[in-house]
Image (cartoon, rainbow, N blue to C red):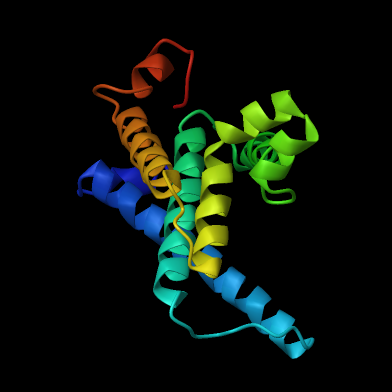
Length: 178
């Protein structure tokens, strides 16, 4: 990534292109997963009245998680460390979200501390947006939280990759990425 940033283009543009490529790749993988599910006999409505909102939720979730990855990559120097770092971020976000258990069920079951963690987890809001879009229901604040997290993570990553202002200054002092 640091070699890519030596191009004579604005850093935010390079990071945006990287983010877009990451999101497209993840959406292609999700489409392949849906294709395998259909081949295995799962009955899925491929096109319906809610499809545009489902696609918007999926694209926003992919961009949000990609921007989180870009933000984490500011601090990771070696590719081998990046996978481990992502595992310590993505897996807890996944397990402490509503991907496996709906938010209202968490509150109803009395797991109040898990409910509170899930409520403030941006991954929860990506899942909820997708879930409500599939049923054609109002997702509430979830789209705004996902888009705000996307914007914040991308802005911090762009700031972090700028050696004039961001975390690059730490590298000169020996405390951050090179």
